Length: 112
Image (cartoon, one colour):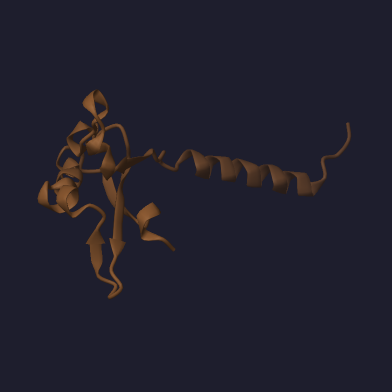
């Protein structure tokens, strides 16, 4: 029977520790909501209240932006502010306290 080189035990131990660490990480399910989906016709129309707050661990609302003075501005003021799009979206956290909501900044209309 041949001897196992000492470095192989180090490699095996490293792989086992790495695997154990990975198995303890929580799964993330990141979902992306586009604010223009409210303008789709018929049954394709999709509002924040149509989102299942238990399906995703993280929700991203698209989009917001910045003015030249570096102040925040909504992508669609009518839908995001006046119709309560942001409030309805973040309000999903009342159903799932572990839900993380985020805002994507930029998008096609913002340029680079």
